Image 1 (cartoon, one colour):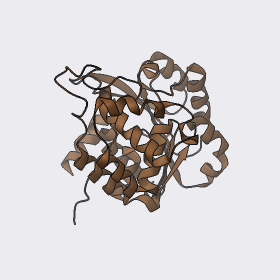
Image 2 (cartoon, rainbow, N blue to C red):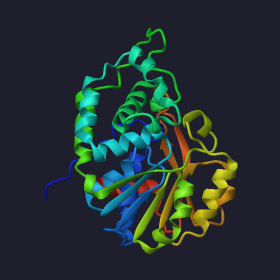
Image 3 (cartoon, rainbow, N blue to C red):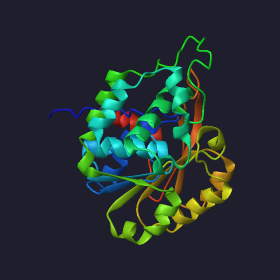
Length: 294
């Protein structure tokens, strides 16, 4: 059997969940949850949903994203990939471009600009800012005297190839601009009717304000936990391992600790995260070990 090419997301994220894909794939197969839909309310790099779709483990995906820059990028990938790739190809990867695009960080940008241009700007900031953090400064600093300059993470050929590969899934992906909790509450009845698996990777509780433009306060984290508590669909949540999160979810599903490479600095930074689910979830390391033997 021909091996499926593994997808790579063009977006860089601290704590990217690509290493969770084998785990979730095994989980869905063991629980006989294949061929349904996956809903990813915090799209980000979207690699979990997209790679499960690419592998044929799920049949379609719904991506929800609150950040206009990230939403516009994914919407462009699936609605107008050719124009997006052209924008990426002709975009000068310079500090001057970084400065000129700063207005695209305004919250109402989708009301004023072409969505593909917004999506290209989102990709640009993600690939040229520290650790892919959209609110961070440019790689190499404002004076560009660092060893790693602003274009060091912007391999145009590779990025365009990744966009082209992912865009082939366009008939199976829906991208929605909304807050995750608002979307889930509004569509609760429809979600429960569908054969849908929810994978949720909310903003980190502790580091969220430093990492995201749209982060959650305690009330938002509580609102998500309250929704999950009553959700009848199969679901898996990944979170930072914090006492507040442990307390919010201590009576909601099963909980496992995993060791995770956050990749926020130039070296690796291994920390603990939580996996929480209403499914019976196996140990994380065992799942990866078995997957590597397959």
